[in-house]
Image (cartoon, rainbow, N blue to C red; front, side, top):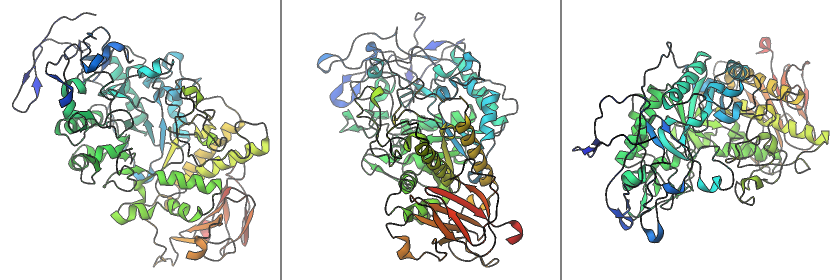
Length: 640
């Protein structure tokens, strides 16, 4: 690889640098060298010895690993003068032409959406039906056996962990690890090259497009987890890759115009309120929708995107730009509604039409099923779509993306297997990862052969899954939880590109029953309008039927008063939806006998049993709800 020519760019009246190269074919490599003052005290870090990526590059070539020659600072705050052209990543010229074969986006309503969060590489690395050379790739994820499996369990949208080109951190490389999750972006337009079976930038882009096309043909949407809040350049001691050498003050938040601000915990903070930075993000989002045909985005640390300076702003330029954009206003937009900066926890704080990962839902559901005191009333609010969070601003219960588990934390199995995190393999002496997980090991820390304990753990997993599918809002699965997946107690497996993170496709009775259970839950939700409503419950009787849309039942058969609701020792109650669906919850250690409303009730599922669906019998006066279980009953159609 050698340099074949240079072109001097010219700045126009709008401060856009531009040039033209004739007869440049796709696959050609290029980069930028930028001349300007080295003035760290002014936040300016120009260094023409560093070859920079084009922020608009549609593919990136080279080793996606930090190299010492990419270093920004030398001794005594001077510029590092080592030329990094030999090791620097290169931008690739790409042709956008592609045969989409009449591709049409599924456009699934939020009320019918079921999201499965997954990692492109980790999902298929051990899949026995995916050819070895396709495992861990876009092509592997689009394999018919993979798509058939997702259809079977009722998934309508895959949410892919970051697929933008990212850089592996130097400190991880020194430990023999990599940035597996990929929250370390260096290319807002380029699909990560390592996830492509094909070689060459053009082929990689086409492989990604083929994956999207195949998902769409199966009626499954593709949502990308995008990281616009920070980049892999880190703080001033990090590598110089693109923004820092192009326009440091234009793309990053600076403290007093000098040092980068760190509201993301990664070293820098992208300044989405800056006109050039905002334009780049908007151009990137439209590119992924219009050229790559994706259906939506999940924004990592989305509170950062709403910052003006050090404060979150409901009317931030980014939110305004999205709301009026004719392309983006019609795609799925999901916020991770927090960062670590001032006023950073913004669950419920995003404008329409944004949806939010509901961290309060996650925590309250975990605490309730753990059996915590005083958890019942708040749990019931989460079940009903978190009206006190979203209702005051006129937002629907479908604004809440309901998750118990995401990639960041324990798996659902590990939540009920470990009291403490076990992250020693990450090389940080178990200091990394959240220590406040609201889980319970059911009596023994870690794996055990005690079948009674294992049965309790599986029961808690089923109770959490059933709760999620029976809650108002959008169900969100973490891939593998339906297969009884474990990470051995690691709740921060961001650097584990190995069997800790790869999905295990081995079959046994437990995984088969759990997978079937999730498939049945998804089918039940599709068939039950009460669970997919777009308006909050009112508790008032319907003028036509006389039934309340929701009523709360004490085990003795009476309706719960406000005082009894807030009894800190309450661990069992019932919810009657539209007078015809009855959910009985019991998170105590003992079975609870419920007195039922009048009429005959047939069982839909009972999480105390394996399998949980297909139970026979009719309940007319009493029903027993086992410990740490959810029993679902409904009136036969002729009784409605």
